Image 1 (cartoon, one colour):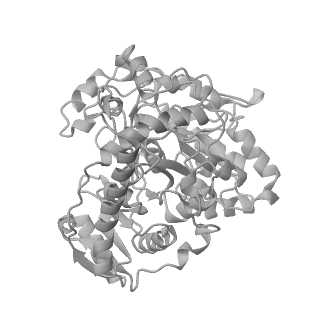
Image 2 (tube, helix red, strand yellow):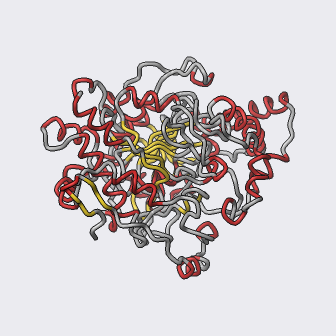
Image 3 (tube, helix red, strand yellow):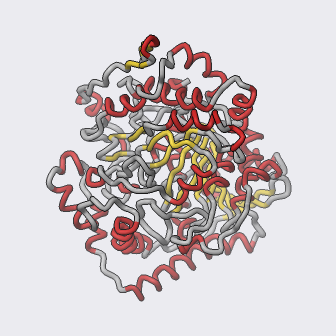
Length: 539
């Protein structure tokens, strides 16, 4: 399919216009899906004009053609950051061509109604200009992330682009960079654009599909469009990584929002210990549990991204006294599975993929201990989320949001949504209603947070101490709530595909601030199994 027509005589690129299509038939088919989360009410956004995105792309291509795209594909597709940097060092590739290649690829698929994944909300109009600067100043490259085009979940503030959280009410939310974006750009990363998400990070509606936002529309899974769940809320980051739309992406998690879409899209997702990475300038749910984290196609890139984002933010008290100067990209290859003690849930062994990979770890020298922990009482977890968002969202708007924002509270946003509910809240806003109704004193909230944290720690520490475990193995985001409660970091890595082709990840859970150990184990597992496959339709 020819997506871009090069007019090299005037150094301009023409992109065929996106034409919204009648989706009635495909919605009718999905209405019969066994999963209620896949019974979509709409797929295309009624707010986002893709042709405005394509204008931002066309202005940056300078005659980049399909021929250029195909010639560069072997150098870029599925390659990790060190390999890309080696191609640039050798002269086979440049940061400019790398950035243009990804922009071309985004349009190639997202301008095709049979392939579009709706995982991109915004394109940085200055991405290629930034890449050219990187080419002229390669001597400044002192971190592997230098010159690498990345995507940010659209709840992360980025100068020059709106940060919408997927919500119509936040269309004009333009502000400075989030703390982690400053860290990435200081080291030379290029923000390619913003990724779609479950609106308000999946804390808006009750029975809505993962990956839907009013601004971005319905994010789809490249392994099975409208067939497999994307996971949420960092759905756009996961879908875009699977489809090779950027070198790496950043997601955010409160409870499962990195782990779920990473598993569903066969990519590597790290949910760090809350406090390792700053939340400054990120639209919040809960200051108690929120954290950003890297989402990549491999462990190598994940370690590089984590290292690039780390740092203490005086404006985010959770980052005070966090581990300093950990160059995660320098030591992750030193890990081994041999002799490490892994806790394995007996009930999960009924999952054939989990069982197969547990056996693989055992064959590689890991010591597997089958166990079944006591059930954790999660009462109060939702109350914390409600109470936190009720205060943390207005605090974000006041400190980091655009001064022009008219809607300053959850109640304000609910009132705005009701004026055009078919566009702004087709699935309702049941969670928002719960936030507004929640009342709890500061003293009771503090006590509740301590209780939930204690329960979470006990859930993991009791078996870890009893069996002297190094870490616990789970599936996808099944233990995300417990890990959030305990503030234990998690790393999910592709562990294969169901018989129908649906991806699934194995998740390693460790004690706080042991991300280095997680990456070492993840790398050893990844190298021994190499289970990730590129989606067939996006090769």
